[in-house]
Image (tube, rainbow, N blue to C red; front, side, top):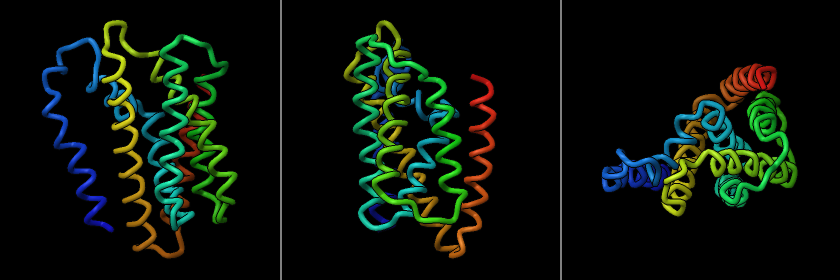
Length: 192
């Protein structure tokens, strides 16, 4: 399992040089990839999704991040089409806060509830990615980029979640990490 995860991460990051010509463009794969990776609020939420999926365990390790990516794609398309969604920045900040709290509490949440929240949060994140696409970007490459960037961060979150649970079966590290992320989310929410 760990070999598969490591290989997946390496594949994503080693494939980036093949897109090197886009580094100087006004948009495309690299721009799309960088948006979730370099956006602090997006990155925190995506890492939380990966870690939260490991708390649920079983198939949720892959289905929770997959639901996020699917609904993020939907939100991204809505954003690319310039269709408004109210309170996007508020929704993104709230996702960081609530996902952090989901990690901080020491209870196994029902999977349906986690999936519902993940899907809702993903639409906000996707919409922000779509709306912020550079005017001259290649839309398909940009979308592929933010999907790959998000997936890479989810994989990192899954690896962190598995590693933290292996090192600390009482989940103190996961809970305290979630608490810190929730505090950051609270600050982001107050800043909106």
